[in-house]
Image (cartoon, rainbow, N blue to C red):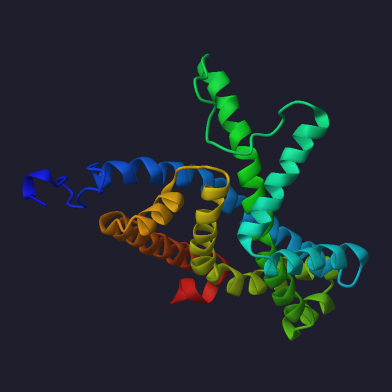
Amino acid sequence: MAHGDRHPLGLGRSPSGAFINAEFGDRVWISTRLFLASIILTLIIGIALGVYTAARQYKASDRVITSYSYLVYIVPAPIAYFLVQLGAININETVGERIFFVTGISTPGLEGDGWAQFVDMLAHYAVPTFAITIVGWGAYQIAQRQYLLDNVNADFVRTARAKGLTRNQAISRHALRVSFIPVAQSIAFTIPAIFAGGFFAEKIFAWHGVGSWSIDAIALQDVNAATATLAYGSVIFAIGAILADFATTLVDPRVRVQ
């Protein structure tokens, strides 16, 4: 490939002749919009349910939620996404009209003001975001519940209760912070895992982001596109590691002192 055919940033062209940089820029924005909300919801719901179930150990709510988490933890993500898609299709067929969009990022040829386009975008976001979230939070719920239970009977928690705190107060003020440290450190691995699982979500829900692009690049032996997606994965892992360090610093005073 001649130097004059290359993009200034140097990622080259795809076999179709398109600049890799331009394609990557368009698709990474699509993937970011899809996964950002899912990652935030996964963290919040998973940790909150982990604390909730640990505080209600062996009660009915704990057994139901934890059993569900173990179930989705072992089910392959593509199968779970496909089942959610089938569920949305069945709801549409039962109601007799389209309530949920199960494919695509927007309605082709949609005309109207910015509000109509925004509502249409949210309608297309609902099913894939829901699918990624309900699959992702299970691991966080299990981890947060276990780490919190390991610290409930620790000496520092018993000391806090001896000083007059109730069990819930001792958990929220002392045990929760300590138990969150290993969960915060796992963010470095969970965020890349959600993106990796999202590759299948993009294929199933027909979102033309980095994930589906990378799968197509491998099938077409597009070396430049595959290299770009590999670099993208490395950046995502680095971002996850930075966020994990930041979260650990917030909850662990020893790290701040060091």
